[in-house]
Image (cartoon, rainbow, N blue to C red; front, side, top):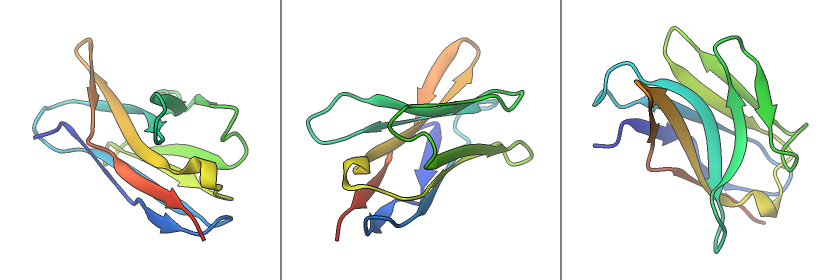
Length: 115
């Protein structure tokens, strides 16, 4: 069982929006979700966005102004609001978490931007 679970992916037309969610699966206690990554066809996994406990955020240049990362601390759930989606945003999106000096990953959720 993977420690993190992503959801919210799907097929969307260019210019459309999606909101991804990431939450602990429960297999490992105390994971702090912190960042989103993505991997397109034939490409390396790349950084998308991150958020700290103090709500400081960082974004890749390719998504800046279009994507927004947020977190519900009560649920320990992280979100990625994706607006103005482009075909080049097509990728498997992964969330990452941190606990006791170790990074954890989910299985990913597929986002496909196509008409």
